[in-house]
Image 1 (cartoon, rainbow, N blue to C red):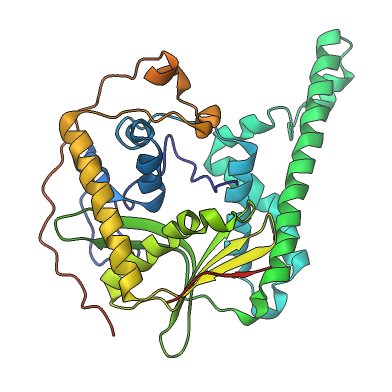
Image 2 (image 1 turned 180 degrees about the vertical axis):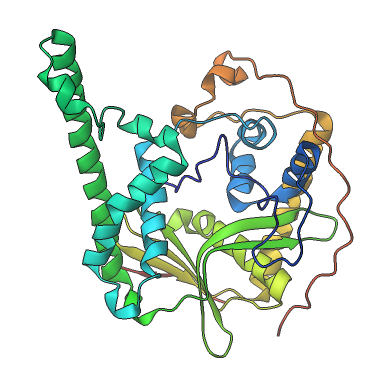
Length: 350
């Protein structure tokens, strides 16, 4: 299953931009490196929670060391598809068509390369301006470069087409002409008293006139088997917990849209579900804090190690981690949580 890549020098940040959330009143002083590190250390996203549950050392590499990771075609395709689905809702409802989505793929790819130049390394010889000149040069080197460019360009076009197919499948699952999201790429944040600050970015939030919320997350991979549904839904339950604690509203529906297999997984949480999620998050956070206090970030070798960028640094594979960075971790400020307002098994469609 592919996971959208939030392209940064290392892992996704565990906090909002230094300027603060959109709409914040008044100018704010620039954030210092120490303040940024401390904020990141207190925050917890569902991705980083899953990292720690899978491998504490991976969590350390991504959150504390901020080690870079190479982009992959699957991950960057996820980022591209998410960008197109977001931009599509900028159009008037009648114009949200398959053709419009396809037309957004190429410009969103160019915009992604401009924001994150390192993704161009996936197809290094494609889209160059001096290709014809090299091809005309009478040298073996120029011929080799022209062949590399042609191969990369063909690979790029196949990759863009694969993104287009995922978008086409989305139209079989949802009708964007009938949707007016109240939030897209929505930053959510909720501090838990004596615990972490829950943070993350929700792909889409739909809201009825009566205030009922549907939280939607797009996945460009295939739906998991029923045995792994609970793990897949943890991310949405995490977001639902953050929304409940920050707004006092339990989302009516959590919805995972799997574009790789054309399936939709839905669940309707209740307060008991979210309290159970909070207990799980608090237990994970206590384990993270214990590892931080002890400096004990143990690897947990498994099948996922085959795709890990950090094997050369991992003791399980004969590597040596870099020295632990010294990060200030201030105590969590007092929290006044929103008063809670006021089930079901997952439903699979497709």
